[in-house]
Image (cartoon, rainbow, N blue to C red; front, side, top):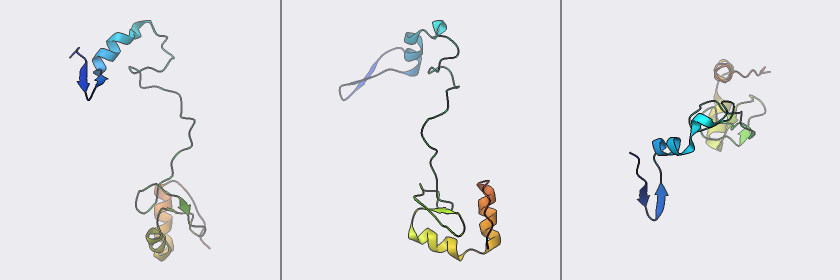
Length: 99
């Protein structure tokens, strides 16, 4: 598996070939590489997901503090009883005191 594959004029190298070509034995262990799982934390903000559907959330309900991405999810969230809202927020490790 040390050959270069071509598709539509592009060159693709298998991972084994990349690891062999990079010569990771001579790289300082603290630097992130393809061979190391450890990498510095991302500088981008964490994505927020809808508590009901799992899609990327653009909105937050001001009353329950639950995140949602569509009006349909908002209607469902507003229709939930308070104890169910608390259970969902506990899954996300977020707390909201409902009044």
